[in-house]
Amino acid sequence: MTPAQRDLLDRWLPGAELVADRSDLHRAGTTALVLAAGDDRFLVKTTAEGVRHIDRELAAFRSWLTPWTEAGRAPSLVEADLDARIIVMTHLDGEPASTSDAIHDPEIYRQAGELLATFHGQASVEDEDYEPELDERALASLDEAGLGADLADRLRAEIESWPTPTTVLVPTHGDWQPTSWVIDAGTLGVIDSGRFGFRPALYDLSRLSAQDFARNDTFEKAFLEGYGSDPREPEAWHRLQVRDAISVAAWAHRTGHAEVAALSEATLTDLVP
Image (tube, rainbow, N blue to C red; front, side, top):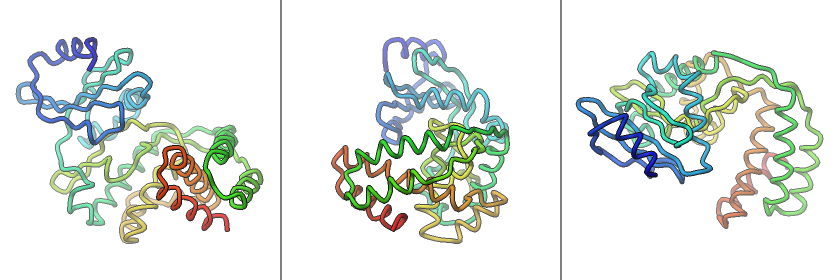
């Protein structure tokens, strides 16, 4: 932590003691510490310059997490200083869902759907520019993805042919999957809102669909039961999958992850035969 961050923390939680360092569970450039002050525990997050996740998490806390925090299903904000890039929240008890046996229980996915529906249902806005802007980014990433010329040409032609409808955006968590959940005595809680933003509702199903739903369709059925509907309108869902695969391919090519690059290329070939 920087000296300014340490000074703020000493003022906010005088005498607090370190319980655990959870930084390895978070993105690069983020420090996450569990501290104890008396009988209370807190999670402190700090970020390096240029890391935007703390901005998004603070925006979520200040305006959108209330349905979860009031129900005890998410941490509550304690203190924050955006200029110093530090945020303090209550510590949410529970076991990480990603390493819990409970993650094989469809009931957990039903709760995940129910919590997400509550979050998405708080507001909606229409955006005429959302789809065109994403298409522009996808085309730019395509030039950096290292794909075969024929596949790249097919992808470019398809993206340029896509409609650009006005899109309904809702508050989204942005990383809705077991790594962002904790389980306490069978009850699901939500952590890490650093990718919060207004997006189409279907965005929050992308990681679950590719991972958990793919390994067991019972999880998908339970989730949709909890959510109350399926927001994955087929054409919009296809566009999201293509854009995501291109983004991953570009990242893999740029960072030298050959296996990920090959998997992304195979995914895109299936999506755009």
